[in-house]
Image (cartoon, rainbow, N blue to C red; front, side, top):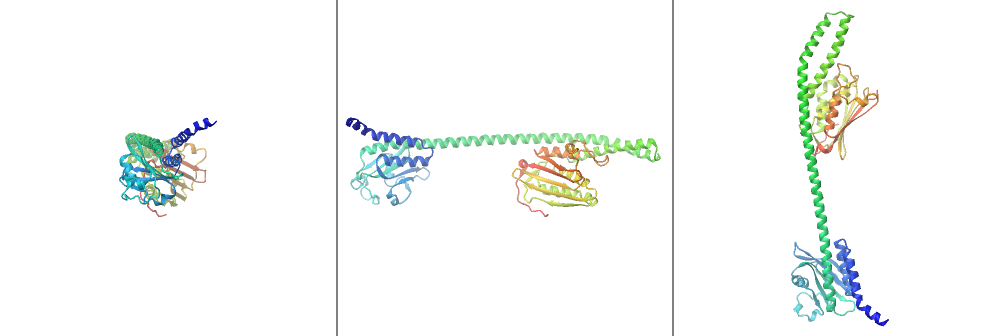
Length: 437
């Protein structure tokens, strides 16, 4: 039994050292590593006071990162120059020192600024990784009140090498995370640039497509205009020579209605071709609405419609892709739905991801049966000479070119509300502007 006990005692420091290494090797963060390292170092050599400094390469200083013990209030600063005092002595040589009694150590005689030390024996060990100084570990005041011995210095020198590896491991991990973060940011930037390039390509394709449609529409309209005008003129002359009730007159009136519808279609095509554009210039939605209302003044005079506006005061600008056409068609439809007067409400709203324009009327509304078809080309419930059903389909296509959507809420004889949503993809920030209500 005595022999077994004798054999176990020399292993005790080794076991404690291994346990200490396990604790510092499992530390994931620098502060945790430094606190654990200082605590374990004090425990290994049975010291009561200690401090741990790290090198600040930019300022060429040693910065206090961990401390324990009652004498620490006597430290004049938490930063020390690399050539100052005992720390500077150890840093310049990258070599540990053991002072058994500072009063009798020739290296620190003649004052040298160590009069503030209240202890006579201490250890100061550099923390070095592959020849690079990372910091310094200082220990003093053994619990036994005896001076440190060479065995203490050996343990601490070996221990400091493992602390250096831990610091470097955490630094490398942080750099790896930063590199991964930078790579991820670079990947996101590349994807964003690709998306912007795709959108620009889509815009160019849309611009070319709409320009081609506009040219085609203009060509067809001009080709049809002359024969339609001539035909209608002869229809009118023929009707003037026929009496009421004449069967031929009734036939000609039917022909006139069909020709009038064709004229309206041609007129809409001409309007579309002359106004269709993708300028991509930034415009203010509120200002566009004001311009549209101003251009429709004649409608307001004849329809006795009251307009109530509620504009958001700080909308970002939107790139113009024919926004005025959207509002013109929707507002004209609203006015035509209120031939005997009513109220037109226009509001602009902003959320985190889109701008919304709400246009409401108190007109005849839209029946449940017709609502699914209102954005179809040439669908209309108006009289032949009032419209051809292209207005809302043009609105739908223009809004869709923004990646937005247009919705309708309506009941027959209870008015209608159109909601036009523009994503902020095309938004340009601007200073706040206040609009009169």
